[in-house]
Image 1 (cartoon, protein in one colour):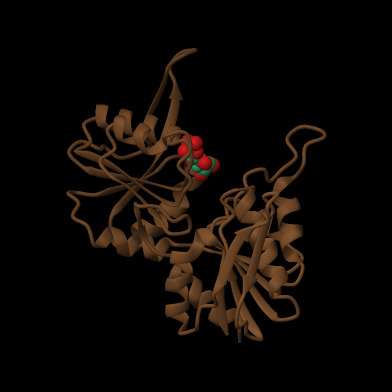
Image 2 (cartoon, helix red, strand yellow):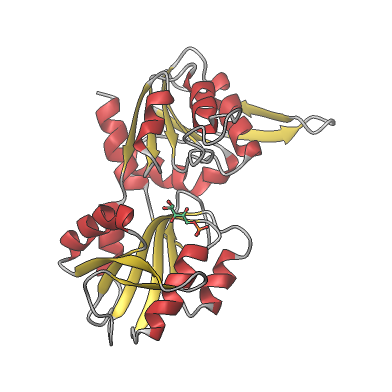
Length: 284
Ligand code: R5P
C-alpha cells in the first residue's frame, strides 16, 4: 500500500503515511500554458490511499486527476474535508445537488471512501462506492486534555451539535451544554447555554466547521457578557473565509484551533491516526 496526495493535503498525508507505515508517492504538479492542471505520479502501488481535501475547485480537479492516475488499482479514497457537502439538498427548484454531483464524480475507480466528520450523513449515499465518515471526537478530547483550562465547559453552538460535543465531554470527563437562541424582539436575540452557568469558567465552543466565524463570534460575545472567564473555539474543519479568524479574535475568542483536514497554522489536531485506523479496516 502507498499514499498519494493532492497539494493541499501534503502535511496530513505525510502523517497518515507514517501512521500506516506506508511509503508516500511523489507527484509533480504543474500547468499547461492555458492554465489547465497537469500531474504526474511516480512509483504507484497495486493498492493506493488517495488523499485530498476539497477546499475549492482546483483541489477537486487535482483529486479527480489523481484518481485517474491511479486507474486500475485497488484505491481507497480519503476526503479529509469534503467541500460542496453543505449543498446537500435541493432547496429551490432547479438547483444542483452539489454534494451528489461531487460524490458521483469521485466514485469512479475507487473501492471505498472515507470522509472526516461529514456535515450530513445523507451525503454518503451519493457515492457509488462504499462511503463512511469518521469522527475526530477522540482526537479533539485528547487535545483538550493537553491544555490548561479552569473549570472547563464544552459548548455546542446549537442543539444539533450537542451530541458531538457531549461525546467529547464524556471522554474528557467535563461538563457540556449547548447554546439556545431566544428571540427577545424583532431585532434582538439572546444566546445562552441551555442549562449551565458560565460564570468564571473557561468555555470551549466546539463545531464541525468554522466558515465565516459568524456563529461562533456572536456566541463568544454573549458568553463573555455572561461572565465566562474565557472563550476558545475548536473545530474539525477550519474553512475560515472572509477574515473569520480576525472576526473571532475581535469578538474576544482567546484561541482558535482546528484539525489538519484543512492545513492551517492553527491546525493543532491531526486526523491521521483516526484515518489510519479506518483505512486498515477498509484494506482487510
Ligand atoms: C452549521 O450547520 C455548521 O455546523 C457550522 O455551524 C457552520 O457551518 C458555521 O458557519 P459560520 O462559521 O459561517 O458561522
